[in-house]
Image (cartoon, rainbow, N blue to C red):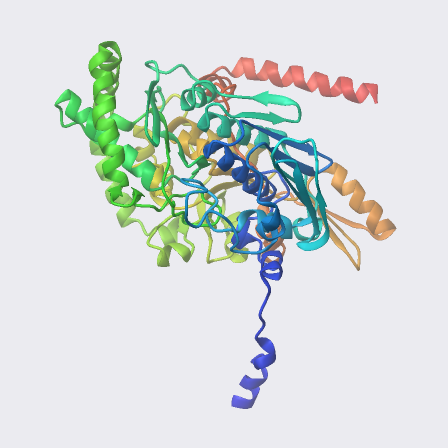
Length: 619
């Protein structure tokens, strides 16, 4: 018996132990350095992280008082970044862009309160690019070094050049690592805008278009709010801190938080300190023991801090872990003292704003108390119900990480036993959870938040996501709606999206809500299999497979076997992020698509069907 058992054990000798060079490790495990790869369809895909790693260095030059403009170009998948800072010291240029743990940001005065601290960023860009060029100009002298996949190709020195000081970086992401990809310029533009909001006086030029901000975070809030605020945004700034605060009419809390110019999409210690300080300051101003949730419900705010040697929870720097803003000064104390003085002063000087804010708090309090009884019963029900057995099949990461949000964690919201069964059987149990809906969820448009607690589906979903007290406790980085690609599936998508828009819009604003795309067709012959997400992909697959092609139309998720499903929720998963912009008026959209105006929607469908018929007639 032991002999049979041993035959199943893989050989494990000295030859199994390998030492990789930094270049080999980055190319083999890029996710450790840039998060995920992706094809450019998501704003957090690796190709955008690489742009940011380069631009961060140029922004750091501006922060240190060198250079007031940065030029970015993207053409034919080649990215160029030119700054007018001090220029990388010429003798160290090659090492600075190719040797790990080499840089000027470890100590000393060359860089203070910057983001790039580990000497990794631009090296990862170099090693993950099929073409990479670094050029530095300093006082008429220049050096240009080129690389291919992290290996040096050429090194050229020049004297007497008539160029302004600064650094030029050019790279093309390697398709051997990333596969096929393309840049969504909307994502790049938003990245550039964020840089301008945080760096007054810095001008960006992106493909010839100029971007600059005059009012910092105030511009950010005004440019991104889809509805009118209840009162003019409160804009406060001081040494190493800037905040903007207002309230809207929706539910939830919306925050944009930044550290040293880095957008921390998952918040961190600075955002937690800000939330706490806002509640404390407001309670002390009104001399009322208001519940913090009543103060913060519907808040729309932004905070930016500058931290000495910031500590982030991962290389992608999307959540701050630093407990001090500088040695000896805690984050809570710094943010609390700032708001305690400046927000209090503002409310004393602007009595109309103070009155509007107090009315909003009182309205929030009334609504909360009106549903408190239902809320208590709902919590008790959620505790009694065995989520793991009835609705939620959790992932192991939450059993070991004490419910802290992990970048890899995700939850699929699906409908029906067969679909839930397919996903459950094929998921990665370490990082992927499944929540099963029973039939179509309730249309929540026009209802108050009371329905979240009265409706069993919504109550248990809220409990599973752990979002009752705010986004800080969200248990999954990605919340994925996974439905059949038919009319009923589309309707469920709309109903669930409406639920989040109504009651938890910050899940969407935080970039956490996604739609899973599953293939419509499988085309195969004896040698190859293609999964197709559109008619165009199907036609291409048929041509590749030839006359012997076997075509299967998937009508629902339950028809896809668990083995096949692994293809669609693994590395090749296709997700559409649900996004909100200033041009998306939530109320108007919900009223049209989910309201009682059935006739208007029927006419809309009829008009668009006629357009389709016209297109067919013209073909």
